[in-house]
Image 1 (cartoon, helix red, strand yellow):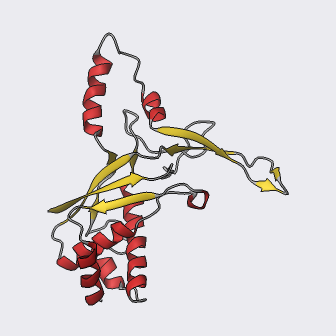
Image 2 (cartoon, rainbow, N blue to C red; image 1 turned 90 degrees about the vertical axis):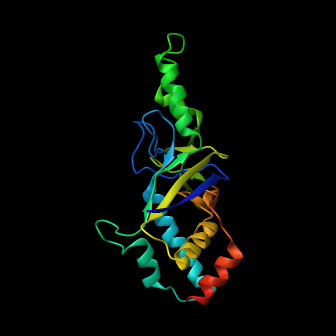
Image 3 (cartoon, rainbow, N blue to C red; image 1 turned 90 degrees about the horizontal axis):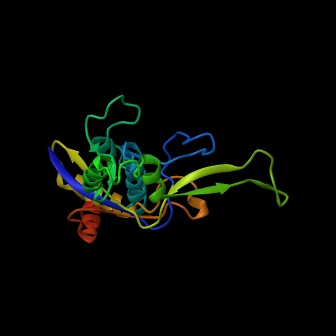
Length: 212
């Protein structure tokens, strides 16, 4: 199995969306592990990568090469992808945090202080939005959601049995082209910076354009 590492840095508060509410008062929550440390689900990143790569093909020639995209990501609708694997994207140093929290929870001094809800609160903020009608808040339109705080950094891996050179170049361009993540992007949320290891964008651009 061939594996490449990638990173995502949040340049603004971000709501990846878990598809679930967090409580009776939170309409849309972030995803967190059992410790309360946030992570970005793999399917969110894989979907964004596919969209980003389609945009790249449009930018460099106007024609989307579906065969190359499906060869890398698998076909949409397949029950299980037989091609690319994307891991959940964990917060940097989360493994070290897990070890420290295990120690703290077993300590007589700190036991009870580090509940998962408190850990999640430390990395996120509660926001509210409402819909306006003629300058007045519409009835029952108030929505409460949790966002990941600006500045957080995440890392994950992307794997395949064997990447060919063109696939590596395509992934470099797709990651570089990813600028937003999650919902409420038109309200200033979700700006990101994404990179994959050993990225040479100029070389990748020339190779993918020449391989169309």
